[in-house]
Image: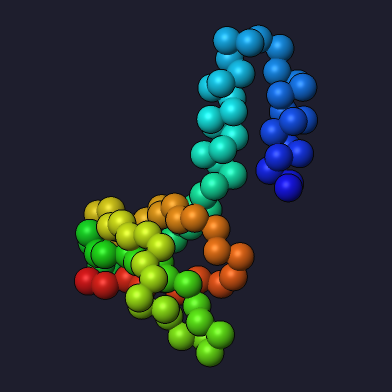
Length: 95
């Protein structure tokens, strides 16, 4: 419901009809992802695998439900996007 209201508000503010499709697509892409930035332990792991999992009710990683995966850069930093879950997530960094 919030997305629909934001979309109607956004459409009312758009001045150029040719740009409206681009703005709608950008709004949908931004509202559908969460980006997590970080660095592994003091940059010790270069090109390490980073995985994001939702947490279960017990506080464990739900390893059967991978939300996203990516790799760290040569400095151990990562930026990973995943769909919103509405709850906490678990981030695993594997060398």
